[in-house]
Image (cartoon, rainbow, N blue to C red):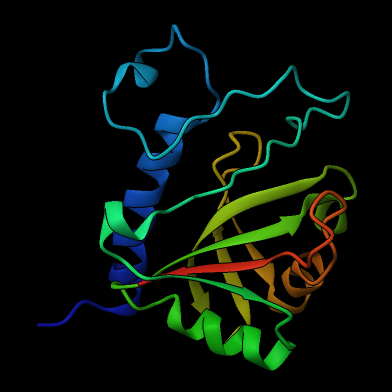
Length: 166
């Protein structure tokens, strides 16, 4: 029997939230940071006055040689193309990470990366698995998230976008 859409999203959420728990917030003394294998390493400067961590550029989030998975960077999407990709987030064989500007969603903050846990097409809502403990997982209107993604990153001079990992 195949899993329901909710069960599929739940499996992804469990995996990503565990990875996020291991990552954020980073303190060398924390028991969660004593694991040998981590999804990545977070080593920012002290938080900005609004509580957001400082920007840290990542050159490689996922290496195909290490994972055996194909990684595609998706930029300059239209809203319709974005919705098409979001519909694929419910596939348990795919993973998506979105780069968006928090300030455009929450009124403060800077650029941020979060995994996408799923898409509720009937309600046009995106389930974002935010690893920042202040936010936790949240639902957002697709157009709002699209606008927060569809802007130029000041440091790279490129539009933000999605990573599709298959």
